Image (cartoon, rainbow, N blue to C red; front, side, top):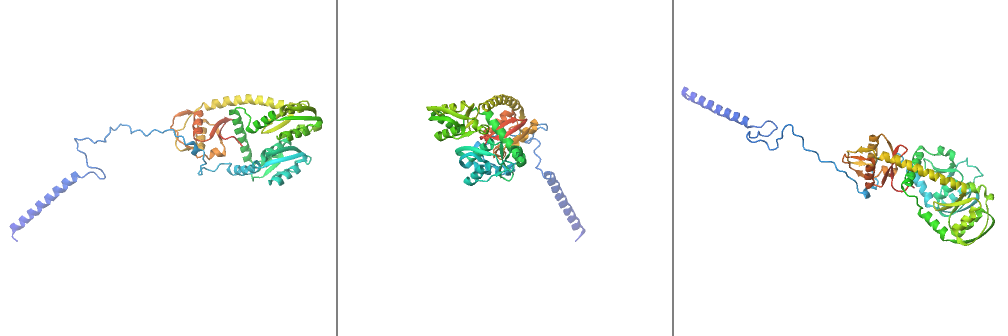
Length: 409
């Protein structure tokens, strides 16, 4: 190959290399930055471009959400364990046995130990009697088809005893001064919770006779009797009227202690039982009242003391209502979703610095709420909770009480 050919080939190779280099340079200028899109045409602004100081789009506003009350009333299987759950379950199981039993009893100065042994044997129940209960403690009681729970409470009340259910679920009749030795701390908390629930129900419900009381009052008004007593012990006179009317009567212990003092002499012909009973008792300074479906016979002084207590209770109720209204007027903000009643209780407690108590049923309700962050009074929050579940909120003893709306047992 001559020199002229060599020069030609070198020039051709140089020209080719230059062309490839230019193409590479043009390609680099056209590529987008790593990980980004190709630069837009400078003459055409991007459609989604915003000024650098523009605010981000607003988030969707929270809305108030109230659960369906039918669902809210159900128990949440995933609720954390209630602090009193185990004991509450044991106690309720024990009470149910006595509540479901219907007693027909006829005791006249029967030693308590014998009376209790008869009940346990006859109705297949189990209960224990503290050794400190005196051997001379006796029961005079005649009832028919009365539930065992009320029957035992009447017996305990007559003898100034306490009926407690221990932490293991056993029933005991004990002297009142020894009750604290048997009651677990949980029991005292639960008892106080139930007492407050009953107090709240009484405060918020107009005084009215129960269906059982109304039935007794109707019998007293419509049943007509004729009687002729001559120096008859008052208990025997009451027992006779019980046979005629098929009502349950209880003569209070302080009357029974002086039974010989109360003797009846009177004659009544075809008059309403209510009038006949009043005539039998009034001459002896005794009266009767209808309570829990039972006719209670007590001294006039004892009844006056109860009436005075009732008047005092009315004043106390008015004071409690004012204190509660003041607390319910406080305002709180609940800017949160997915709240159970126990969560709402905690948030209000933190906002107000006030403690709270929740009953077992309310603690585990499935009701789940959403709040919109608006400021509301505590009363308004309580109303919202009540629309989604059977719960009532009260303020007592410097604490909030979140309670099942059902009547306390």
